[in-house]
Picture 1: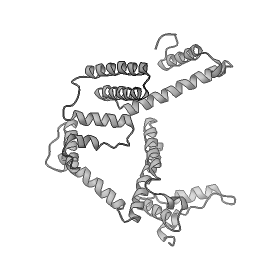
Picture 2: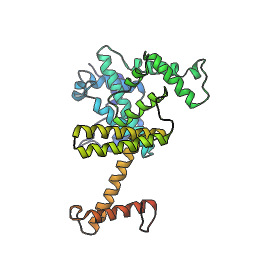
Picture 3: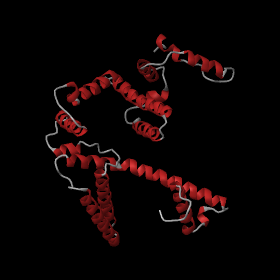
Picture 4: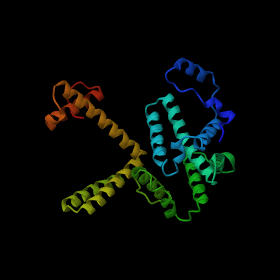
Length: 298
């Protein structure tokens, strides 16, 4: 297809020998801000016969990994409290939505306008306390109304169907949390956190017995039960287990880096150190994190 007149301003000169970087920057700065419509036009051009070979060969399945990656990069920007990075990563995530909508448009299924219309209709319908006659005084009331309407929209006559409606490809910790939440909506829940702790302790003992039996299938089953019970405890304290575990992994890497750096200052390699030596540096790192220069237990 011919290069549309409206898209000519997207054709910024490539930096190469003979082009001055300052000229390109000046040209880009002189442009007006791109709009939502521009983004749709750009994606349509990339997918057109005269567009990008890589973009043209993608489909919904091949793009799955990028959608997940971009979502996690948004989370990272939020954790870093970096507004500029968050703006950039939200753009990358939006691009994935536009990409999928363009593929669907080419297949005659739906387009970006349908996506926007659908989510707008959903927000209005599920906020009947704002746009309708429902009343909601508390956030809990809002959640109850939301879940009732969602169940109605999806035709879920039983709570089992609600549980099955939680996406199976969610990270397991996140899926566990959501399934437990929805089971609790009909009273299938512990009365208090102490009960959840008791169940967790019970699962620890069952896992120990399974490990003693050396039956791998039983060990895996009991390990799953233990993790599920741990999620239940997290839910009682309104802790998102997926985020909590991610933070712990980051903390582990940071402390491991400290151990490796400090061992290098001593002229040692980790593989040549004893576990006791490495553990001493680990505890030293924890003390510094607390701002405690004196030795002591964590």
